Length: 314
Image 1 (cartoon, rainbow, N blue to C red):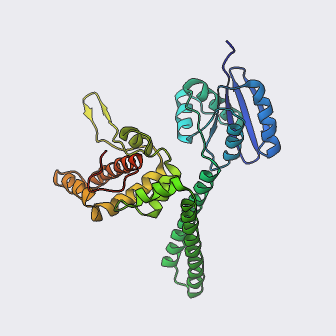
Image 2 (image 1 turned 60 degrees about the vertical axis):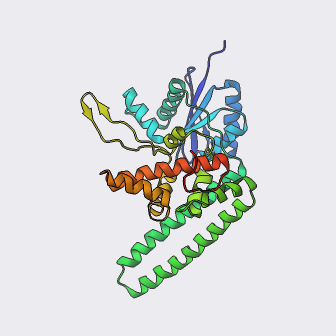
Image 3 (image 1 turned 180 degrees about the vertical axis):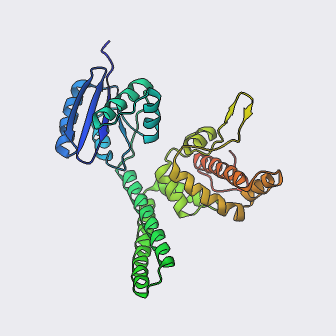
């Protein structure tokens, strides 16, 4: 049988450093349309079992999509995974070529599952949501500056920027609503999600964009995927507190805000929260438990295409 090949690609703004294992071949192409064409030609001869890239703030998207469209199995790794793998190997030196070889070694050793990107409409929806998040971050920064400023001119200038950003946020909200309304499947799921007390448009948009697996996984798997499943921290006689870790940060953030609202206005989750606090659980622990419970409810509702009930079937 032919030897399986694994490819690691270190992505930077100007170029792509490529390493192939076990052949040991290393080469560089420009991070341009022409360079991607050259990359695909060279990898077509290799026929890799898997190509891995590291997430680099979006710079990897063009290469990932080109590889996927060419029929090559590709996945994008969380930088934390790569960092821990490097430490486990005792690798401390860092260059672009070394990083490419490290990524290829990661693929060869652990063989993570290939990533299947969403279609063009889903990627456009993700981009809209990401832009909205950026605008909200800018609004927060400008409001903090307004609060700390004591100069009349600067205050006026900041207020103008804040007003402009608020308008941009509203336009992005409308663009997201329009995108949902133009997709029948998304429209149904959006209606199901927002029928839940505590789940507003932003939570629903985030789940649609960042958690497309919702409704297709078991309760345990979806909780692990998001990072709200409690993890053990026990060793020998030591017994630690359970904690949540990893997962999809954006989804976890909006679930936290949804849970904060839900424990006030959603009778089912308020009951869960009150019972846990009554048993002596810290309020933060009880709130995390409500996050997980809310996610499990939403997963079941999307699976069954059912609107919220007082106690959904999970």
